[in-house]
Amino acid sequence: MTFSFQDVYIEDTATICGPYEKRGPFKKYFDKTYDDFSFGERSWEKAEIHLVKDALHMILKKTGYTKEEIDLVIGGDLLNQITASTYGSLGVGNGFIGIYGACSTSALGLIVASCLLQANYFQNSLCLVSSHNMSSEKQFRYPTEYGSLRPNSATFTATGAAVCMLTKNKRDVRIECATLGRIVDFDQKDVNDMGRVMAPSVLDTLTRHFEESGRTPQDYDLIVTGDLGIYGKEIVREYFLKNYQITLDHYDDCGVMLYHLASEKEIQAGGSGPVCSALVTYGYLYSLLKEKKMKRILLLATGALFSPVMVYQKQSIPSICHAVSLEAV
Image 1 (tube, rainbow, N blue to C red):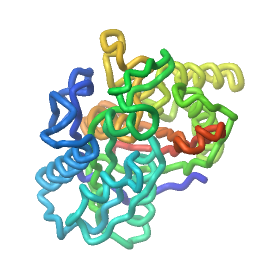
Image 2: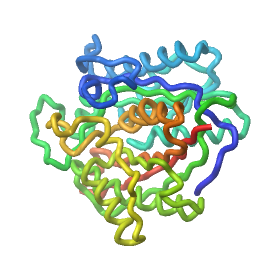
Image 3: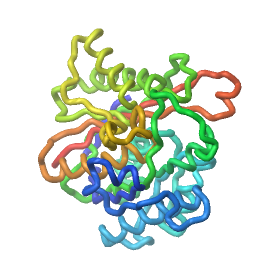
């Protein structure tokens, strides 16, 4: 389903990241960076909560709002029961909605918040996501201390927290329209190949977005997925060329964009995690729109909807993709 918004704007954004992201091409677009993974905390989970608190503190500082003036906080992460979002958001806002869309959570949060603002239930909302490489690897695969080998198709969970504040007040960038994703399952079972798992959901959502909106790739200055990595990105390109004779000339993937892949061998196929696409979008892409260097960008945030329990039971991995159009005013 594709729907449009008339008066939902981005007030500002805040981005906090870890060491690998800091060494990437977008360092100057991040509000705060760290040189290690612990941030002074004694567990990876507490470290991720630390990131969330940092991001919320930063967005309040940048916008001048107090905690009490925030109508709604919408947050999600990869930890069980989205604990980074809930613990980190404690005391902020007059309402909280916890969401889970795996790596698609950032776009899902923007869609939910935009619908509520458009309906005049709220005047503002913070959309929050986070992920931490160590806490995610520990939960979904193996703790890094285990030293398990990872294939070239594996992606690297990004470390950071990112917040986007939406408002009814007119600003330089707005949420223009969105296409809500649906669950897709192409019988993929490899947890170390998220690009191939999630690419089918991008194909489904992007095809429906073009059909329902009446648009073509030429209506966007840039189309970005997040985060398929280098292999999933090529699947999307090849599919549209073969089936629709469409060349996605202005298309890239946030998991590929976030790092210098040639020099960061540990990253392998690219970045992943809820914060991966959010760091690129709320940092670099938001600045392009705000400075009028681009007019309209389509974000297609993807998520693999699996748990270790289902993987151990040899089940396939379903995926989802939500699309959000960001437009310079």
